[in-house]
Length: 275
Image 1 (tube, rainbow, N blue to C red):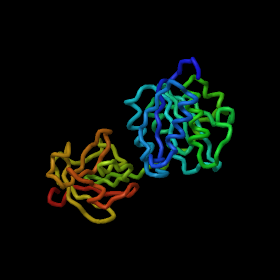
Image 2: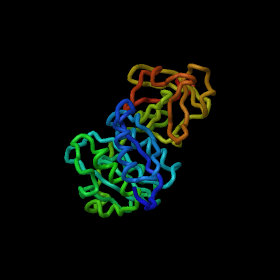
Image 3: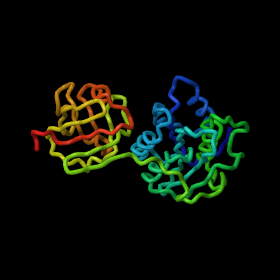
Image 4: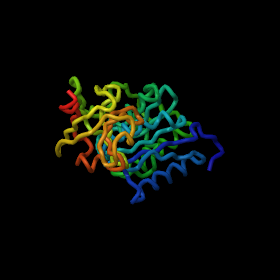
């Protein structure tokens, strides 16, 4: 134990580990042992496996509502390969720790932009034994704990120019008059489809009838402000709480009704009789 007061009283934690296994608990155990007194705030452990774009979106939309913290992010399809581990500090003072695969960049921008980026190369910051397949426990959690306790991340490894950090794949979106094409970036617990297009880009009037085209077929919808703007079981397009365009079904799952999966592209246009 230690009498030191942490620099950051909070560590947020985001993974694709799920909760059926002991992976999350093992990482939290490392955090508790190395950063006693620091609270862990779980953002999500149900990110789809290896879903870098979805994880980045979830984290980016959540961090503005969190206290200043260390953000531990483990979405790491390249674990054990030559991919780097990194830590970045932001203008707001928050620190993000995770793999250099693009997952940290959009959340860091939401926190004011990166002021310092380092490669996690100093093994003294890690656990004494490092598994090739569990860097979340053996590398990233110890670094996050050290940062929360006040360690200077610049001592965790060599500095990296931000231009050298790996960019996440850019989601697809396009707009042409009253029609948009957009990639599904997340599907939430209710089956709502969040699209890779800001709600400010919506070209339709509220109440306007729409046609949605997905890889499984065509569907009718209405452009609304909230779920109750259509009858139960009917489809609507709306601007969600993160300001993104989304497809939903009142009291049901849009993903199930439309047969749509994450990363697929959907097309939305004004219905023929509205033109």
